[in-house]
Image 1 (cartoon, helix red, strand yellow):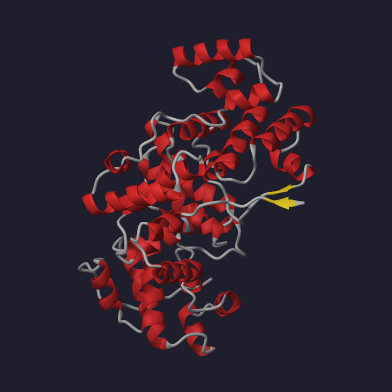
Image 2 (spheres, rainbow, N blue to C red; image 1 turned 90 degrees about the horizontal axis):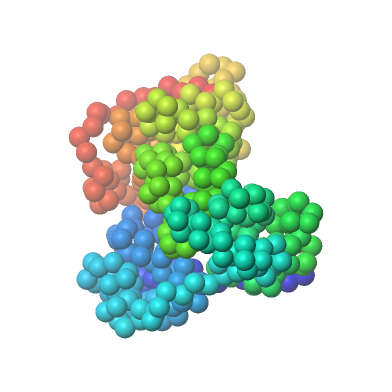
Length: 404
């Protein structure tokens, strides 16, 4: 069987643009591995690049993967973005790398025609309706009962895979035909023709939004198609068309990270997201309220998970301390010290970070990064917070009494 590569990474563009050294990228990757944070966000936290530069690099990555730009052209443009604080389009014009025309590659209509599931007359009629109603083509085909939602979803997923260099168009066509005939998933169809996809243990943001009942399957497919044609993140499309608001997306992304780090189950994350939307609470307060759904899962915003995700206490020791704390009804932090699972100084810093989260002065993500920096560099909590610009007037540290 053949394994298809996943092509260019954002780090390749940033290093080619000479904005990030290879050593810095390696360090950021190590921090990302230990903390569960995206490497690009770590680079921003370390002050090596701006969030705007990373956002432009994400777009540039899509253009490179779609064969619209070369890596060299993307790197030149991103260097201009960073130096002159302009958007990617202006940077491409400045460097003379802008495509002569917008290249439309591997669009859903082309794939469906090649798959024999749509004829050219049907495509022409559906395109007219799409333009008239300002809805994406795939959605129109489903509404007209020309194709099933499953087939359209499969075609959209293959577009993503083609863009990311995981499959080619011929493999996509064969797999889409099989989906229509057999009614199985696109992944199974690709496996049956010998394609091994580049996969990761991640939950898709769409799964979480659907389970939390914030969007339905049809709306998500609409957003996915628009994100492909407009070269935008799917979350931004969902906001742009009013499916969700920015607060809901931010909460969903934070909860998605907790699921991917195995701090929450997908069901817990969905319930927590519902509480964020319905009650107007923050993620930091919504997660503990759903802990009864799965008592064997560590909660992402409690001290136990903060210590584990920061690499200060192993998962085995965390679970042991929680179990003893629950049985004895003694504070969790006392159990950590009693069994020498952590040094008192490190525990006090973690306790303080936990308080800062509860006070709304630090995000969970910032706390994990702060604990990691204190542990691995030996810097004090105040030094790290000051360096990152996160220092605020807050209450003095006090003991936290946590039970399982």
